[in-house]
Picture 1 (tube, rainbow, N blue to C red):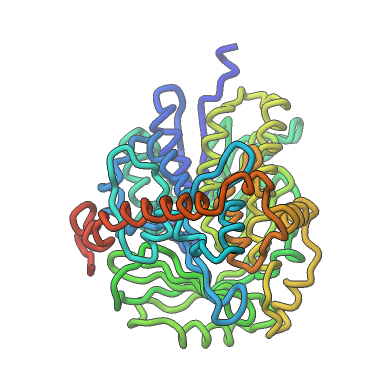
Picture 2: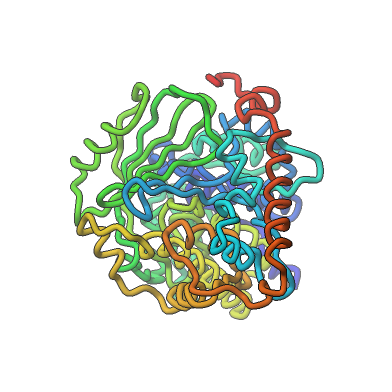
Length: 498
């Protein structure tokens, strides 16, 4: 039985996915197995996943990563949410913040009390009942003792990979420079036996983690796992990324600015701004997208814009034989809600929780694939919501999105909220009720009714209830320091410009 244990983990490809996997396995299993990562300096990484969501705290806690040290090393800033501009309609904006909204009761969420308050003209905007939402708007932030960690980061993806690379090497991970020339598959059981590099080096392993990006060198080109295309519901298939010098005060949120055929991102780091344009090639050429992006960035260009082509969707199996696809090799939804790094960490942590034997027991593999698929489907639905529930009809792209048929799982949520004001969070689901609520309302959905238990509260009591929550939120945010001041105190990078 001991001889059946996994002893050699081989990671194909570097970047964020590869080095997150190397750091996790070397730090947490380095005493019982060897970790080898094969990476070529000749292959550029996509490297635009520079915004995260709060679940990254879980990964960093596992690896005992010091937050201030990580942030200073990666020019990171804090992120409390995303500003969606022109999504509901041109010149109509809203904020999707992290954190909780108001206070509900055993039968109904806060939105039901808020809805009645709106009808009576006594309720403020939904964001006024969420501390993170208000702090976003006012540019406030602090890390406090015993606080809910409802915040994430903007971080330099390249520097994050270097940070994890250093950590990995400290815990025994071996990096081998080279191009993978051949994936050697066992003809009897279909497992991967080894990788042959361009210089002839052969690297054997028991478990292979595919971090080779969109091409899926192991999971697809060698094992032919199959891919499910979601282009019909997530039609954007291209992005252009460019970095610019920082020209203004940092905001603690990502900007997502919709345009005729997609959207533009702005991600503020301590030393620069990350910019990009996501678009659908059916409605916009690369050259048109480049022109649009450069007309809407601020500051001097640091690098040349580069085009990234992708296909939204997922591998039919994230784990096949003795290979697990992580990151872009496993599929791609799109960068709208910054879920890529979350899915990387979920794949890694779930794999470590289900570390197999060399035989790759079917029950373990099937359970992993089922859970990953459930989670990615839920994220897919949340992203599709932004495109589909819109009042925009000013371009062919938005008319398509507005009228496209969406998954029944998403349509059920939309119908439930529209009819009754109810939102929910499933098991294995990333986005909670507050997230669904903010995006649905922000995109223009308003329920037809609220829960009848709200009427048990007298009108004057409802007014006091709403006012007390708003007042408490405002008092809390008023006591926070300025976001930039806190960064300078807590995690200022050596080349920071803030």
